[in-house]
Length: 468
Image (cartoon, rainbow, N blue to C red):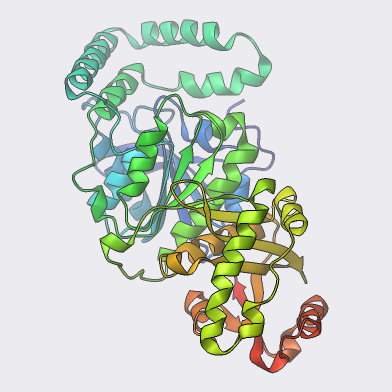
């Protein structure tokens, strides 16, 4: 079995990269010809399919998906030159050129993270956004140890290169048989790994040990999301968080899994990946203004929890006080949603919370299915955290949830003339709906608002299309 266990998946194919060699790519069409392109860059020792196969279907609902094998891995480029991460980045750029793609979201996992970072650094016109998963700015803890480790791997690589291809295949086969056994379900994974060039893979480990982007990663100015695997024993969580802290307005998605979470627990990883890619894709067709470095910090967004209820009510109370500034004291005095109701959203996985360094909520969003659209039932950000991208990050979760459920738009109701309501949402891409455009359920939402004492003349319904 050559193909991953995903029924009906479009086959991959070889692509000749002039002056570089022949690589392999899985090119999956998006929902429309103009869908943003996500370029998936896999981790060390594995292949594109091994790393990403559980994510293909979900991503394809929103994006065109490219997943390539790095040189020396799987069916990637074979070269006698020493392995360099910079060459992997240039291979990715050459692939995009060969396929006629001029803007991508570069999404890297583990070793793919440094490749994505280098792709942005070396080909800035190509990279519209970054998603960095289970990765960091560097991998060697101590420079001296890192050099020793790199030299050891390079020595092993040279020894491997001396051996004949037949001997290499025999040794690799014995190793994989010992690790994988004869389980039929693991046969496909074994076939993928047997395609690796052992010498190149060892050199890749040496290159990874020597990677360090600390001196320049803060220059990144495209929308970026960092997916932190909080149980990771391979890439320390502190290194993942330090990467996020170094990048302007980076959004953080936390996944309670280890380094193998894409395969071990895709139900946790894939939704976070989709939200991250949705956020990063906002730079494909729009420029994102820079903010002063001192005003920015990583935005950590996680799923809401049952115990968050009282804290979310407090966020709502504090945020509501701002309505006194515009003569809407009755709105400021309105009672926040009950704890039980907030708990129902958490249990249904229809709520997300932005938190600070102490995991204290600073904003939240909850969503309903209204007329087949993802309807924002409540979006609230503490005043001292407004203007920092928190609302945008929370709406990114809503867009990702909508895409997961095959919805084509996000809707909400808001005040027409409050500066941080309609004007802000218009800036983010929402448009006001005319009365004749409202579905029956959205009309019911408006009537419920009126029954609660909100003047319908001051309110508007807005829609944010998910279609490119």
